[in-house]
Image (tube, rainbow, N blue to C red; front, side, top):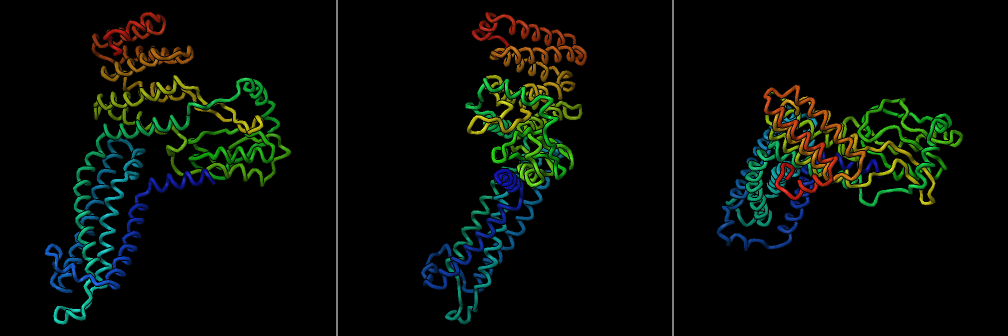
Length: 458
């Protein structure tokens, strides 16, 4: 249930209809409330205010009709502008980034404001009765008219905001900023400071999950085809504890599974029937696309896609790539200084219940340093920035395994740069930076001297 709730929230955030629909419903309620006030209270005193003077029922109808007509017209214009920005993003930045525009609260609220004002004026317009010839029997909703004018002024302000917001939303630097902040938040949520399990039990667990475990386990197949969007890990742990099972998940959030493929293994086989298998598979929520929910790799892929498109020959914008590296740097600094989650999950009694394939720093590093390598290596600015990022990580890294990993990527970058960079001086500069990076990893005194000086790392 928790996983499906997360998917529902993500779908609502990614929809362009929910906020406008909610605002229209609020406009209907507001129209009913203001109509009741006008019907039950004497509001003729408002006619003495010059700002809200009207010329009887005809004037009231004219004002409401004008506002309603203008609002539905502007709503069409804003919707068209949104479609233009979405098509621009799909062709120039990447189709996987369209969801960022659809989730943009500013766009949703702007469209909702115009439509809600239109609906409100339409509902109030039907309450205006009578003519100026017989003003005593006419019904003029003064409070409702006042609210309609206020909503129209609010809509004008919203239009000004929207005209400013649309160019900002398609600014690639701002988009990289939004994705980078989302990625930092996702890393913090998926890899919290207090994560960790009993190290004493870890070696025992790995012995239990060897080849014998697979032979004695029941394979539970996926009931559908699609991307794994959410895994309700707590529900899965509860099911495993309830039926005294040990479950191994074969896929991560973001992976594509086909119907009939092995979704998980459950041990022992004798305790797993069709009903229990259905309980286990119900903890997985599948969809037609990858999402950022429980999937930090999706956000990294978005930044890498922005970077690769910026460095493509048709665009040739290395400074956008540099901005992407800037936002990736704090993410990696968080990862290398934080203990990553264990592959095993235990119940309250300390019994192993769920084993997973955790995402490692190696996966993140491969996505960032391997995928765009051919584009980065051919551009001096981007290549030097990637080398600087690797050196920055080595400078703060205390884990020898991570240090070797970043040195390997630095070596690959240097070798690719020697082949792709056409200017000899650029090749020499990259090699010099690579040699500094090597010395940085081997010589702690040199590392400290760089920190204390105005060297290239600073």
